[in-house]
Length: 338
Image 1 (tube, rainbow, N blue to C red):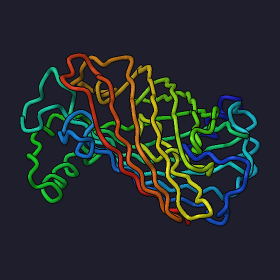
Image 2: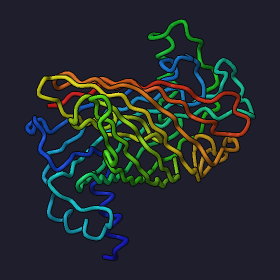
Image 3: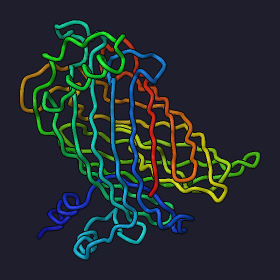
Image 4: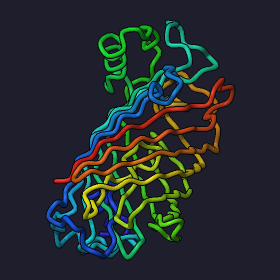
């Protein structure tokens, strides 16, 4: 087996993003699993308009205590960025994203606006930790097109959850069915720089990575700043790609609760975005994408015992030529350790 084949095998067997944990043991070491759910929507981003990236839902399960198979340890020797150890973890997720043009009440596709599209996927991944260096590997498999059930999901929400919303009428123009594959790698340096400010712990975490696939292909880099009253490990709240996914991992201080404020930026050099470029293997509507896109975000996370809730407000720069308005959306997540 060639070195390249071994790398592909590792990705196929154990891949997906996960959580960072320092070499110190958690105060609740027996609670080594985390379930999380995140809902991203423009309706909780202070604009409330169905356009661009309009909705994302992601369920995640993180297992910090799984036993690493011997063959995986052997294969990892051929992947330079990975060194499996007792701080490695496994993660699974299931999610759906929905994208729509600025006007959803028109049956015809606006030739100057983005395509209607949906993405349904499952992911699996692995993370490994060495001191404060965290490497994440992710494999995502799914489908883009009618099989992703974007039309049914959006119409259901508009009818039963937000009945005052207009009925979306342009789903007949959506991208055609296409298998969706992404492989992503990312490195973070948790709390690379930290200091004490007025009794609070302030830190900065730089990151960089790359994603390859027919859904997204991009290289990214950025920084996250955090301020908290304690040093307890609080990883980034769960998000939906192309944003930094986060892991949802957190520790609970001895007094039972914690909080932190965060703000960050992630810049991407985009080679492919199927939701703008259109189908890979069939004719479909497309627009001219921007090759440089950035996300600015800020928010708060609050931990109470084994539970954490967080809110993130995101501003995303224009993604295609002629875009009439930049995207602003919110992300609300809930996690529980067990």
